[in-house]
Amino acid sequence: EFWAQGDDEKALGLSISPLCDRETGRVSVAKGQLTFVQFVIVPFFEQIAQLIEEAQEAMDQLRVNRKFWEEKEKQQ
Image (cartoon, rainbow, N blue to C red):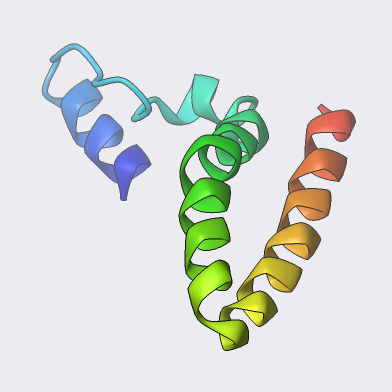
């Protein structure tokens, strides 16, 4: 979605919005995902998991997702 917007902006001769440049974005996706998970998702779900036991499943999957993106970042 973001890259499609950047493609349209580029085709129109406009400046490409942040995070919307397909060419430079490919190398920063993993880092962006890790940063988002670390600063937004983990703090949110930690609070939820303290209140709702079933949310621990989401925390477990979050660890799997984080490892996935860490491996992707190493490959770049």
